[in-house]
Figure 1: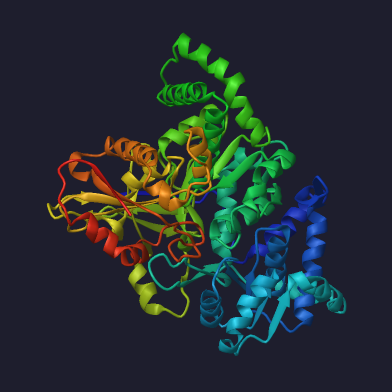
Figure 2: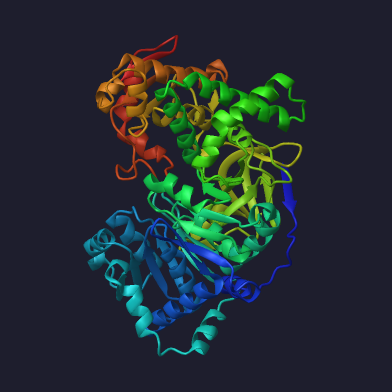
Amino acid sequence: MTEFTIPAVVPADPDANITDLLVDRVNETPNRALFAVPEGTGWRDITAAQFHKQVIALAKGLVAAGVEPGDKVGFIARTTYDWTLVDFALFFAGAVMVPIYETSSSSQIAWNLADSGAVACIVESEDHSARLAEVRGELPLIRSVWAMHDGDLDRLVSEGTGVEDDEIERRRNLANGDDIATLIYTSGSTGRPKGCVLTHSNFVELTRNCFVSLNDVLTTPGASTLLFITTAHVFARFISILNVHAGVKTGHQPDTKQLLPALGSFKPTYLLAVPRVFEKVYNSAEQKAEAGGKGKIFHAAANAAIEHSKLEQEGKKVPLGLRLKFRLFDKLVYSKLRDAMGGRVIYAVSGSAPLGPRLGHFFHSLGVVILEGYGLTETTAPATVNTTQLMKIGTVGPVIPGVGVRIADDGEIQVKGVNVFKEYWRNPEATAAAFDGEWFHTGDIGAFDADGCLTITGRKKEIIVTAGGKNVAPAALEDPIRANPIIGQVVVVGDQKPFISALITLDPEMLPTWLANNNLPEDMSLEDAANNDAVRAEVQKAIDHANTLVSRAESIRKFTILATEWTEASGHLTPKMSIKRNVIMDDFSAEIEEIYDVPVNTTNVSLK
């Protein structure tokens, strides 16, 4: 059993809560821009003192409306400035937020609100209001619903003017470190969502220790970030709180279709993203180059970037020829990609799924250091993260100070420390099953290298055992396949079967551009594309590449292209875009069985 436990570098303060992070920031730098909101074609700064004033005003409104200390309040909204404003206002009022993904169905909303015992809910849009209204009859505890689209936040502020400052100060100091800060429900990829009780200490202690680990990222002159992944997820929620503590300016862009223009005007110094975003940036640039007749130049530039980065990481001398090529491509290709991201991005923090060494090296050569990390809702987001002091592409980095990670005899990653959640809400059986003493069972499988950097190899419950007894980790095949521009999602199957196969979906956003670049009708339907010889050949190429990374016994021998999408709306993806493997296996069981009707000895393509 391998274990790395890193002592906290910041002394614990069991009396501190999340509100102290904002109060300390205001006391230290009241006039520093802590947020920026869209205004015209630019952005308007909001200082720490202004944010604090707005938080207190909204907290007073919540108090005047009857919110009591300890009350659970649901919140459904996109990633905007108002999200963090509401978050801190609830902290200052002594309440507990129950964040709900803005894409959640009515039944999911009902479950989170009912299970948590929420007494109120804040919604952003008419659509959110309508979804909540569908299940309002199932929620007798909900006594208040405030709609942001109807101006209810402004009304709360107006109605709270009679509440004294001293009452807010009293309430914000009620919680100590061990008290519940928020109740976040898991995404439900393996069953009904469970409520994770995250405490104030989980956030405070992890924030203070991560500030030390990621100091170079957070103290870059003019440090800023543009958030676009959902703040209802613990990853962006934690970063929002970390930025307040660090004094990093945060902007928001909830519409990912407007991401590039927003990056161009906001000009962040670091990004927070999931691997699919980096894949999209790369694939879009590649297809744009193909469309302009510069595909060969782009591929040569990409290969040079990856080779250059690998040699640098290995500490080897970069040959003169490669150095010259790298300088040329920096002017022709890399600089344009940097400009597309705003021109100031130095770092990016990536989580939620493996990025893959190829993309890591590519962006590293662009001058963007992608710091992959690893964590779960139950670990308040990060347990490990690459740092500027110890960064190894292809790993999720070393253990964060204040945290311990060990690899059990069966390969499972287990975590203890300041970041580990308290319990599953009203679910003692699940809580007991999740812990071995103070160690939390993550369900993930991984290994440490000699430097203490962790690599994730798969999910314990997802390991496939073929009829021949071969253990196969799907992620080792799925991640490189999904990097292909026309592939949307992939699920590797083969449990108790004679060989490994895969279900493939196409990416409807990237497909038209790829089709046009290959002299095919760009309005081709998914069904026609799934049966097109050129599309089949491109998918085969992605499969062949993935197969080179594993043994023959683990290689994909057959696959089916589905004429459909897997989305959150279809029930096949979680809000953070992770696949719901069990749902897919059930819904496409007939297609899977058809794959195995005829045994194969070589790689073939089956189409559906």
